[in-house]
Length: 96
Length: 96
Image (cartoon, rainbow over all chains, first blue to last red; front, side, top):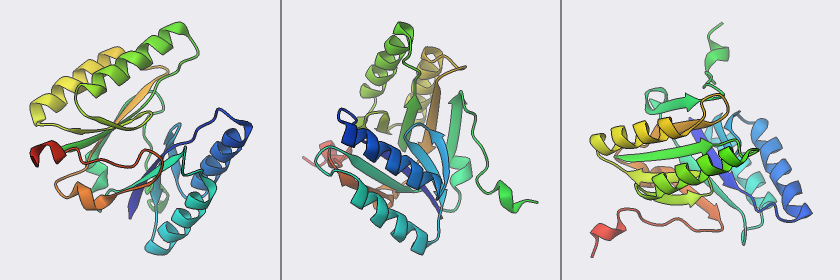
């Protein structure tokens, strides 16, 4: 299923900057960055659980946040991109 | 309908910082900020059209981007928030 993950990490400290890099790097392993703090990840339920646990452990819950949006099966028709870094097709790799 | 709006604005210039403020301020008039560059907006089709036009005019398409996700009717069950700035209920104002 397509899951949109957005995050806010407080980067006023060196530790925050480290957390931000960690969160971004982890999301990169599961999906596609579409904006600075926005990833689209095509995940099965096990992967979603795994990623959720990892990210939750990384953030500082007092200052940082994560949001997970399950976009459903027909997500393609629900997304519109305007401007730089034009959208991509995360399922494209299936269409050889 | 619930529309999630995410944006990236290049703030390396004073003009970029101005654009970022403009985009955020405009989104604030249509919905609820849930993260720094993420808004959830409960919009009718006319409002969505209006907001889309306004935001598109504000950004610099070479460096900035907007993404619009139509979350559909059952959006509440599809969103999960973890960490700071706990989610809110944008339809809560209807429940007096």
